[in-house]
Image (cartoon, rainbow, N blue to C red; front, side, top):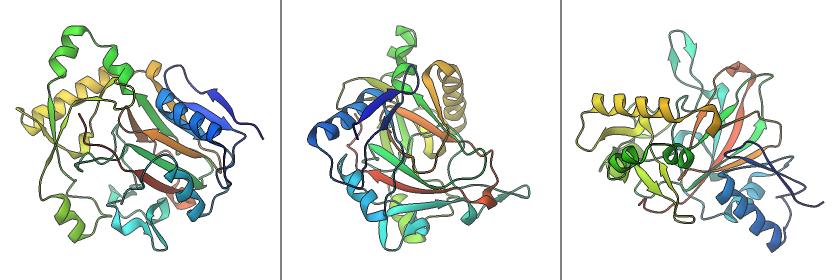
Length: 278
């Protein structure tokens, strides 16, 4: 097989075929995959058949594996993997089961001092319809703003905490993560490319520095509604065996909940250790 890389959308997303991550791969192919993530921000590797150990080995080629704070979802034999199984969803809202995963645009785990640089999902089981994942290029979102607005946003700081209603975190982990709010730049510089991106998780945002919580959410909602347009997004329709890896430092993502949770949407999730944002 020969590695083939095909763009998925104009502003982000690239598909890799002809590669088997369960087997050793050449340095040339590995460098091509790493470059593909940095340049396209979302990498979709098709047609994989991975054991948990093989999955972890493959992801370690992209960076150091990171512990996950979703303690109630960790795979016992491989605790670096969180099992996101819609059939295990705990929350019920207005009589409806709420699937695991944020339904709003966000980057992952801004409540950490060194949030994950990348997140990977591996499709183990899929519902008969729905359950797509959306991605937005927040470098393009920031670059598309007028210069005066970029200048106003550039010095802003977010103050981040873990949500109090997270059902999948045990008490000791929650206590450790809430000990100190984390302050991050709202406009983040990518350490590999130098490009700047809007960087935020509204659900973990306690407030913007200098704003009240309500003012902060109104500000964020307005900005994201103006900047996340179809031109800078990619909606991934999952296939069995898809492995999707994305750059949290430059993208936001959301989970579409338009599926029957009882059918079972099962994803194996891995995160990679990131840097202190700057």
